[in-house]
Image (cartoon, rainbow, N blue to C red):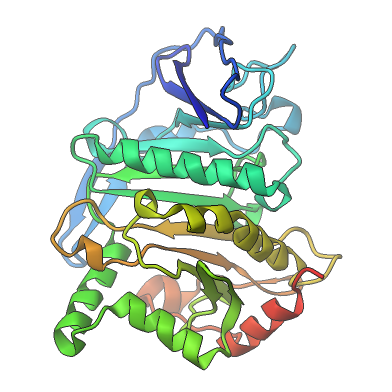
Length: 347
């Protein structure tokens, strides 16, 4: 993999990732951009113990542009985008409208491919591996930045999720604090260790492997299953079979096998509701250990993939119980979801 670091016209960082070592990335951003002016304020919720980011400058961010004005496509005659090159493999740049900025962290955009009409599921295994390498490199680099506590790589796909740019892309957030969901998992893992002497993540994976009814895919280095208490209609957790705290520690055999496993999961998601349905909206989220704390080796890095679509033409909305109380109600039994995900396997 070749990594080329450059800057955009307003001083933001842009990084190209190429599979070929002889790739040349020397295009210059010619846009007359003003310096980025953004500020984020982190406020503490005393009742819940959560941190909330206030980022008012994001009100003016790009919203559903037409395809011929997509800011994530390569630049060409008539279009000066965030990517000055006329083509690219994987590109990462600082978000122009970040939720986290300055001392409050950093937000990056990850463009998976230059093809506007593609999706992650359309990538080749080699392309998917390059994205994995980019996620890993960004995790490693952001981990060294002062004040960064946790790195979160994720993809939102589909208008139903709230995506405002149709180009296949994801994001990376470098948080200056441990996110509430991760903090809760750490507490539960510590309690489990005290009570049983065992690792919580290992026990969860082993229970699913032994039960088997909710396992969707299993290979030598990965296992994917619908969790016993799934929150979402179709939700899959993907774990490496050897527990690691973050992407930096993932070994080469697991890295090599990841593209085939992950691409198959995404393609099954797109087949869940039949060919007449639009592509399945989803969130794919890497859960990595925070960078501080003696217990970080206890954390089991994994990817959580889920959709808000519960049936053909029907969405699961976060209604009063979920949004108001954080109490989830799931219409699809996890065992039925796992069975359906096995039924739509690639032939």
